[in-house]
Length: 313
Length: 247
Image 1 (cartoon, chains in turn green, orange):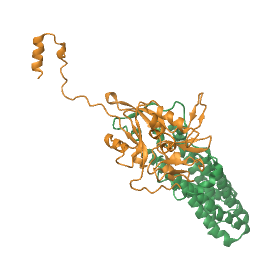
Image 2 (image 1 turned 90 degrees about the vertical axis):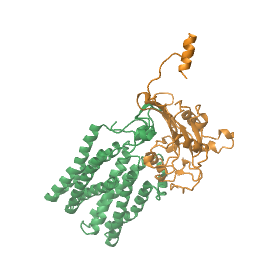
Image 3 (image 1 turned 120 degrees about the vertical axis):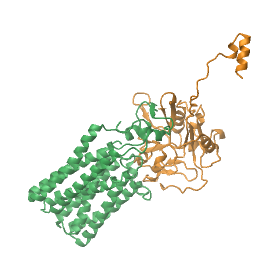
Image 4 (image 1 turned 45 degrees about the vertical axis):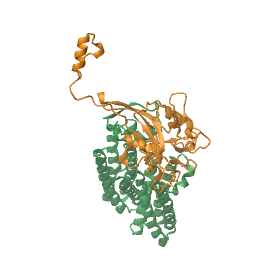
């Protein structure tokens, strides 16, 4: 699949934003985070900015962005519509949460924060299900895809929270959480890669054409001599060497290094901890951008079979 | 509404039956499809750089050519590919706006281009590559099964078939109600063992492909004598002997 920059930026930014909102709502309600107006405004504000930038970026992928509001209507059948509804609904408690933490109105901030956390989790789950519900792309139609979106959002959100809380000397819990989530994310991504590498395509040129009863099928003449929408969008291929390299970069920069930096932050404490958490959050963002790019680049669509573009072609 | 209409028993399922045995790969169906539809229900179908390198545009029908099998068993097969008007089309259910829909009355899958937001998720959801994005209009386009021809009372009745069917010089394309087991197309499918593509994905495509007829297998018995034909034997006596012995 063609890795569209607008979608990659959207899922990484809004994933981190919703992750940050989730942990802010939950941990603050449990009394594990500073309850000052400044910290609250910064953390919830950053979460909302990331979410809004992400959603804004996603509309860049639309042919008719001015009609985007129509996407809220088909939540009965469409995960994309559900994502839109969940995102819009979540803005209500999240906005209230933002105002309440600044006004120090705890009786509003706690329930609003918890509701916002629930909304954030639901929204990211819907994002994951958009991909996981497509049987045409076997690398997306996989049981680890939607949990992965949830876990990576929680991880990057926790890393951002550790970065911010570090400046208030309260990084311990978010840093510990982020380190554990980073390790879990690394294991999930490893298991996912192993599983899709071992998996066989469910559809072949033979089943796509129904000509398998004659023998092996190969292309003779293409239907058009120039490229087209289908080839650009759905027959994108990445070289095996590049994929392996990018996988290592995503695993190291996205998960292993930030988790290690966060453990170091836990051990060091003070301003050094804050600086380490900043580096970790930066690395997570870069690593997840690479991970998301790969998520598209390595995905193969059944349409490519008609053009004889097999896997690893 | 992108929830699928309830499937009623005996409901019409309009679709195409494509004979891969007789298709000659002439591209007439694709050309006439483009010609009709660029001013039809989902018009226009854009063309970028139509007269220079990098020509690219939206087509509802693409004709591939394949080779299947090896050596004497091998066949060249021309293979038109368009919307299958599936019974359970995910291109419809994934649509967030209700622009993509399946008609209850005849099963045709259409796009309401007035409310399509151009998110292109339907194209990702289609296994068959039936949907192509119109980046001029910012909306998705697809085969309409010539909904503006098949019910069109201003054209002669015999022409009320999809443009691809009416133009096919090899009569390799057939149109009809595949939900009616007694229709001509259903009988053709039953006679020839017509099949749907990628059944493993369970989209329940309505269109059917008739498989190429294979040449009969070479006789496995001992080769026949390559003797002269009776007319080639000039000696009357030998001709009589040949006649007796050939009985």
